[in-house]
Image 1 (cartoon, rainbow, N blue to C red):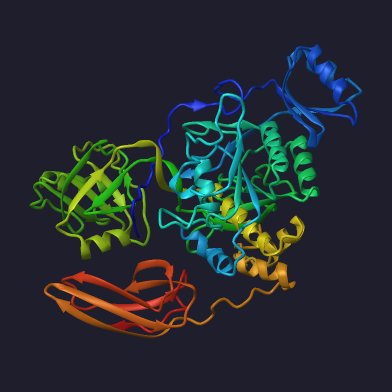
Image 2 (image 1 turned 60 degrees about the vertical axis):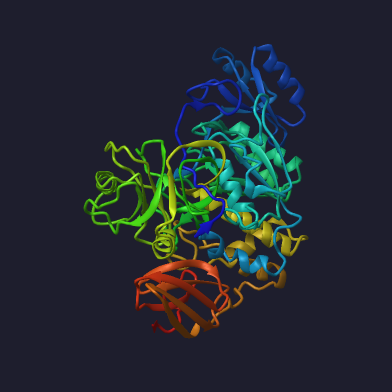
Length: 587
């Protein structure tokens, strides 16, 4: 997948920083939420000041304060007739795991093509802020809030920027495309900060949510959570739900059956994660509150950190520095090293190695011993990956790239000057593959926005019911604890919302058919041209058993040029399917 210009980021873990208030290494055990009786706000505020409490938030949607209270004052406050209860202000953490096929999987392009693209809908993202000047956010209407001393339009850990890209990255020929490609408006509320995102409080989340409401958001995305419930937090989201706001949160990444909050409150949609094959992600939590599923494994999106790049000739390709690579840059003409299982004559060259047979470090050491200046290792399966040298010391830079890019370079770019760069850059127009229910959640939030734009008069309950009633059933029949109602589907949900149908409309239902083609030769180069009819809006192309193009627009034709490949067998399938395919064609 060639992009120009394009870099891929690799996040780095640095110091832990508290997102709201003073820096700390652990949540404050003396920070609580105090629910006051109706009309008693002023009296309770005075009582808190009287005992020396520090008030952090006024949580009007939950009739509560968040405050740090001296431990010796708690008993007296609990006996105050104006206070209904006091509970711990529990911690909330971002839910992303370091590691974008998901957009067509959730039918977003099909719905966007009808004009329901999210225009007029505001999505609020409660997270780590956003790199607002990222190239893929150009032209998007965006506002935000951060507490004193912070900036909502910066993002030091990348989590919020990645989430925002899945929802709204623009269709601008750069990087990635979001579910609503540059059309929704965004309101960003920053509750996490620091290089590793850190953590925040339930009260900060309630405060952020009421700021979303004040900004006019219809949808709130929360790719975050924690393992302890909070009555105040639940009350707040119940109030927002009654006010017509659709709140969506990550189910959690513990890979077990525990609950995570706020996702597990009934007024919030809980989102599980699936991979490109629609299988449940190993880390996705499974419980009775899981409501819907979306892609959350290997999701490519916007990122504010660049951790590797590969440039060949005038083209740039998505790359991630191998973990452990020297943070250097080197250039040399590109050569194909196969799987680099032995030392080759590669003095002064940049070597392409296919993944497989031996370790990444052994491939780099073989290239290094052969005199190579740099190494790019491409995947032996569809898509990109992140690799590690497992602590083995090497002296030349090495990066990982996708199978599609590697095969394209072998066929079309050998002999051209190639630069491998394994250095890390901050505040960059980067991109990254990440895993997590954090990555699944913005797929659902983005779908909710474009579905809502198909019928702006709909209620949040009607939109939510449209999403769940038309989800693709996965796992056990009906709702289950792993997938909820199933995989979210934008086009089907919009049809249900607009036309009152719970049956998904037939997608471009026929498989590609009548595959024909031709082959021409020029020296050692063979050009293969394919033509077919029918098929879905996006298709995959296979050469032999290998997927060489994934989820590309169906134009009814395709061509590629290969070096020293005199015969090849092709088929064309609807994106994501291995059964809705054309005939096989050998040329």
